[in-house]
Length: 308
Image (cartoon, rainbow, N blue to C red; front, side, top):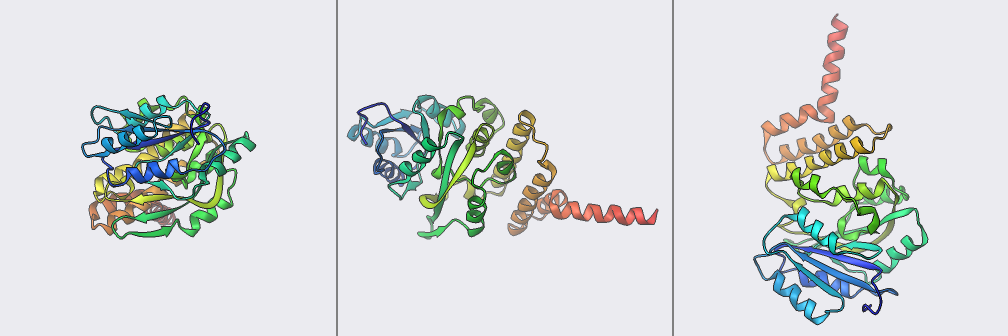
């Protein structure tokens, strides 16, 4: 819907060197069928390919709906998000990265209807499918994730500390909940993405609602952070989650949450990741901190105790 009145939703599209995909992302946002006006804000992080030219083309065609923020040089994902957020002013915020897209034209309407009807809900996410770019095949998000989300409607802060089932391409949230996001901390911590931090920020102030319907497509390409083939970068990405958890439990402590168990789970994942990649030194290090390593330590201690 065109902007005859102030937008109810700002759709933030962050881009960097996504010339092959960004037009699809923009088209999927423009194709949303809604009863309310929305605006598209594209924040480009100094792309060196044709991405900026493509988004400028769409801005010229839909000047009332699309606004482009062009960073003159690459500032990194965190800073790019910060600048994009600063340009948003609508009641609700939808996130759409430049290589993903929404395949259901009713996505925004479904999620905004929920937010309008339930003031306690701060974030709405949904099911999604994964497009493996190299194989050009789709796969649905796994059944266990769907069961977890479906049985946890009203997902809370503790649930999110324990597990992050939310995919950014599916999210619509109340913008006011993200007014004091600590971008400075993320930037100085070398954080490679912002999504988990944003979801936890919302969860400290509201509940989270899951729509059990596949509304969006997450594209896995060589550029995807979660698909990074470099082991060190992938491990750092995973360990960033622990840093975020520490950040939040320090500022929003919760008695029922077992940080050591969560840390062991993350290191167990890294153990298998290292093992799969033939990184045996790293695998041993992660094993000692994993659920397995903790169990071995307890067994050794109990044997020692029996000998005394």
